[in-house]
Image (cartoon, rainbow, N blue to C red; front, side, top):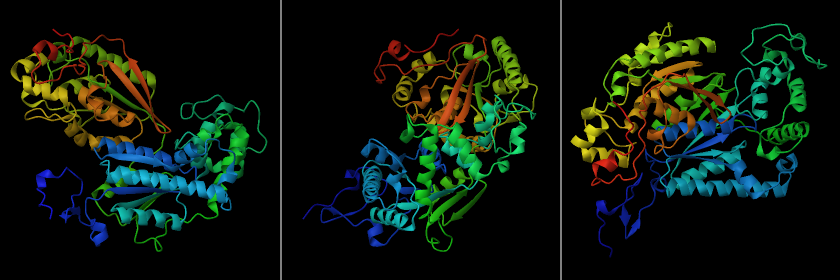
Length: 535
């Protein structure tokens, strides 16, 4: 008979099961008991061009950022890997037995990888990105979750607004309100949202367009376009962004894609408040115009719902910058609450001119509650809001010390921080991991807002930047966020476009790379080799 196992002999697991006769006992779900902390399987639901992949990628990025190991499994990519050459929509016809067989194989392959990720690799959330438009298919996936001890949460995206569907078909992802105007802009050589209303006749009038478009009214309301007209415009103007349509004529590609949608429409069964009342789900209508939420089962599902109800797709830009150079920056000291240096005050004036030149509609300005960000914002001459959660990382006992002093007084702490900068916590202070949790409300508000300028600090800016650029925890503490530089983030299909704008005011360098030697017994010169120059 096997000897009893000590608890300390078991590896860390999300759920630990006792052993019986040398073998693990039945999983909780097999015994009819539901564990609270089970892995979660998120199942996307919806027709093509409804933003499912946009939502799944965004949700995956958010959950990873807050420290929940998450991975997306896109069944369409499995299909492309299996069938190297896409021919036509006929592959998706319900009576195409070969196509059905291949698609089923792809779904099963994705589910096998889901099981491996959640049950063997330590994953907490898997996002299963496919159409899943029939109740039968969703039942199969739900049973898969039950058998493996996962909680299943469905996310359905329903779009009836032709403007939203148009943006998705274009391959721009869920581009904002104004997608139709984006398509029509070349007729007047206008930029959506940047030109005032006016009357500019299109250079080549297009028969059948509504009067508002023929007259060049800007912007054009989505209501002025009916679906057939919109599809016709797409066929003439759009080249789809899907990998299935690389090097395909835009007219042919759009026609094929519309036929592909029709293949799913006839068998589409939406989540139903009566028939699916026992399932956990959220239904999102027209990218957030309304929601239906049913049977949220736990904390992680609550966070998913809260996040999905805060995101939007209105065109906007987020501007991130640090405060102007401070007196302690010049001396190479971290933390504290100093004022701006003369060059820092010069940067504040340059920032004010830059923001004025940008002519940003309804810009909101946020700062921390620290003197150097407030002084930077005051130069703008506009209202601003102070957020305590935007304060710089708390360096605890190391506040206002130079790196040389930290190495001298706390060499062990200095080495431990270099070994794992993301998770290391200053004595009586914070870690980057703590800072991410502190900043989650800021991310939620940034997702809700339109144009925002955030004047913050180096560690804070790294955390925000890592969210928008989908950077891993190991990369986050080493992202470069130089002084006197504005980073402009513009959401695009599946991420953000980043522009770096230096405002031509010199500043000290505060970036310290990870040294090669991070051993606790390293000599001081090797610990300090990457410290930037200072007074």
